[in-house]
Length: 264
Image 1 (tube, rainbow, N blue to C red):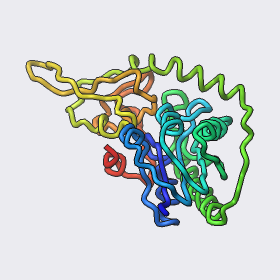
Image 2: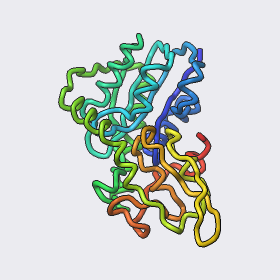
Image 3: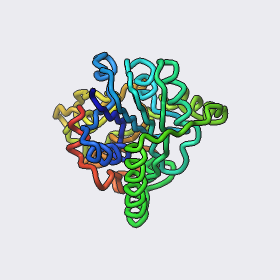
């Protein structure tokens, strides 16, 4: 039977742990995308792990769609949530969504990593990044041993405060897209489009000083506000609120830009 690891990641925190777990169990992680959800290519598997970040105490919208629609049937399933601070009811939401999809969750755990929501919390200092990433490896290694032992962990499902916060975030996050600004340093490389996990960016031609260039245009309803586009732009051409072109950007130290592009 197939063993599978599914991952949703913007700037690499969740993917870093997915890679580590994948290496331990000799499984290649798969990115959660619209194409994967619509493929309906699920197969029964003995062992399955799903990793995603916590967004305002809830799962990202695309992950929510995946948990509701993807025909997943696993004998042993684990939910792992990465976060910079606290996940609160994120795992509970995932468990309830899978339960509606007739899939039981056997194990759930949080993995603390670097706080990468930089426009709210600011860019993490280099020494903090090193410390958090080292701790993330230790936590993930411990989880590997627990998964190998097929440990079972229950999740408290009644989390009304988390449900309220995540619901509020989802209802307004689409308006955040209009806060992005594209600077003239954009060279149309399309990396922002390629790293966007939800396919919320398309390139549109625009006249600039007599020349025609391709610049990103956001689809507000598809954007999950992971900010990968802004963080991974090689020209730092995407601005958001206090994140100026000269502001530092974040990519997990154990993940390459090319790895995130390959999911395109």
